Structures are given as C-alpha cells and as structure tokens.
Amino acid sequence: MTSQQTAAARKSTVLGRKLGGELLKLRVAQGLTQPQAAQHLTATQTKVVKIERGVVPVRDPDLHALCDLYGLERPGPARDRLLALARADRERRRAKGWWEEYTNLGDLLEYIQLEAGASRIRTFQNQLVPGLLQTPEYARAVVVADDVWEDPDEVDQFVAARISRQARLMESRDLELWAVLSEGALRQQVGGPTVMRRQLERLLETSSLPNIKLQVWPFEAAAHASMTGPFVIVGFEEPAALDVVHVETAGSRLWLEREEDANRHRGLFDSVRRQALSPDDTRARLASLIKEYR
Image 1 (cartoon, rainbow, N blue to C red):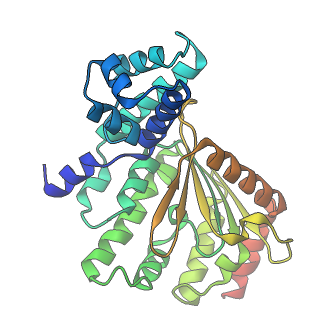
Image 2: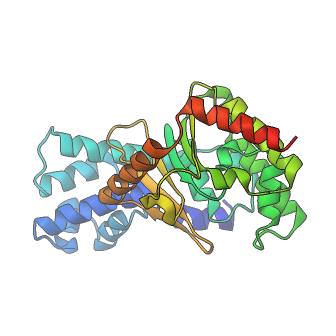
C-alpha cells in the first residue's frame, strides 16, 4: 500500500461519519460514556472513539452490541437502518474502481468514490455545468481557470477523470441525475463560443436520456433560497443510507451529513425545480441558446 493509500485508509468516510454520529447521539441519549460502551464491546475506548468519528468500519456484531446497549429494538427499523448504513460504508471502503489510476485528484477523490456508489444525484448549479454533463473542452477550460491546477499532466488527469465519471450516467445508466442549472451558467463564456455551443449541444442531447432530468432556472424566474450557492445531494439505493449533501467553496469541499441538512437541501431543491422551466421547455431554451452561438 502506498503512503497515499495508507493515509486514505485512516480517514473517516462520509457514510462512516454519519453512522458514527448516529451512534454518538444514541449513547449520549442513554447517559452512557465511551468507556462504558467500550466495556460492553469488550474493547478499548479508542475503538469507540474511532467508531464515533467514522474512522473505522463497524462490523455487524459490534453494531448489534451497541444497539442492544442503547436500547434499540431487535429487530426494528432503527436498528435495520444503522445496519444498512454500516454495510454501505463497508462496501464503499472496499470498493476499487477506475479512479485508482488517477493520482492527483486530491480531496476530489472522496466525492468520486461516494458518487460511484450512489444511485441518484440531485444538484442545483448557478455558475457551472455539472461535471457529469461537461464536455472535455468545457472541463479543460474550467480546470485551466483554476489556479490549483497548473501542471499540464495534472490538468489532463483531472479532465480524464471527469469524463470517466460520466460512464455510469451515459453508458450503464444505473445512476439517475436531476440537475437544475441557472440560465447564467449557460451564458457564461467558458472556453469561448465554440466550446459553449458544443456544451449546450451536449446538454440538449443528454437531456433526452431516461435517467437524466434537466431543467433551466431562467432569468425571468423569481428569487429563491438557493441563490446563495450550488449544492449536490447524493443519494443511495439502500433506503437506510440517508442522503448526504456536498457543497464546494473556493477553498474547500464540505460534506453536510446530518439528516436535518439533507432535509433542508431537499426542500431547497424542490423549491428551485418548481420555479425552473419544465424539461420540455428546457430543451426549447437550449435549442434557442445554441442558435445564438451559430
């Protein structure tokens, strides 16, 4: 294992942190301490700390023991939800995929790994076309404009990785995408007119795929709460693995993992998609914009 892989193995994961946070709340609600939980597991307090921080995967026997200690019914929906979340986290940690050949993805790697295990993506974007729908030329223009990526080889890797991400969406189609894009993102001259024309043509082509729903939030629409910034809601096939929210800023990538965060952003997404053009009207708007570039 390389030093980079070793460091990654010691990191918490998004699903692991969600599970650990749930177990922490249950322990505190029962008035129990970490040493008491550790004694029940016949383990060290360090193990309980790592579980609650999402650093280590949780085996089913340990999870059952903690659920017993915290008073969850066996069987019961609350326990089943935690078991499903633990299994999903273990699967994500074991997963190996195409991204392993790219060595310079930095903190984007965690998002790629989580997206690879997702079954649905909902996103609002007010500045850029979502990465899952970008053409190579558009993606390159975005990367070149980012001061983080200076080495040409790194730029090539980033663009190649972004296009590789699209295989599940475009080819196997086992990922559902619902994207709402601000009209401003479609008029921003990323890469120049030729690049933008091809990007808009790509959006028009892919908007007809059965697993893609695309809506444009037009300039004429009223103000809404999502105007403060873009976000991505990542969902999973396992019904117990609750949605997580990804928010990217200029300096970092943030994961919002609490259930209330997911509920809040689902509400924001529902609000903006109701104000956006319908999928059919969106295709008409795209066709009109394409004509402007000819």
